[in-house]
Length: 341
Image (tube, rainbow, N blue to C red):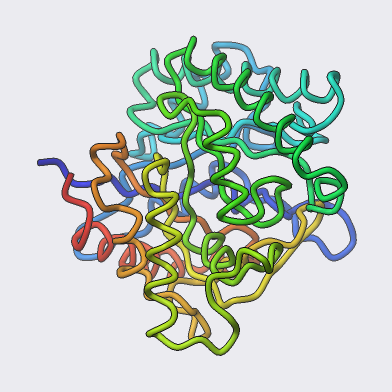
């Protein structure tokens, strides 16, 4: 019986950061690693990191030797590498999965790049577990709504091709359920895509506690809301169970997070579920209890680690050591309650 490993995400140092007005500068990979390495609760430290395959942390076209150097840096801080995030978005390598043939080609190229990097990390001995994360890379749902059936079909076809690429490389893709991505913006639409692809060995679901909470509220799809504002506990838990029962069989990657019921966007990132510190007084989630719904039978789905996601935290929050110790404590609680594989 092995316990789930505890990982921290590196992308909170990047997502929503930049040099535009009102943005904060990115935090380097090495600084994010050092902040993670400094965290400790009762002798427990983080076991690994999940990693975003784009600049400034990674050049996706880096040479083999450069990538091995990154792997050495990460291992040198005491960490394994887990799940990777493919650079599928416009402005990185990829483009919309429901776009033109050219755009879809860029999306698939990003998946190929991620598989190449994964292979180097795997063979170098730095990556021990995890998936490659994708989403539809189509910001917002308005364009999708113009012809929902046809656009979902296009996303499904792109994901099928991407899943075949991943399977050929011995990798699995996980689609992150997040309300800002077209065709993935509600629990029901996400399920339609997963079932449409129908390749559970190659494409699964990544559940993030903050994002999937917004699924229950039907934030971008009121017709799929499972609870209404002002709900009671008696309303919430059966609704939460309905959602997790639908998506859990597909879930192969899991993010611990907190949400205060609000949405948030920064920089080029559209409004999505707002990540909050683990002890945020406005947090709506009983993190440990909610995690149990997703982690039931986790080992049967190949889940070997859990990861914290604090996407779009202010830099001052990320630079505060208390942030990471509080998060680590929350993750230990999740693991100790639900994480003995």
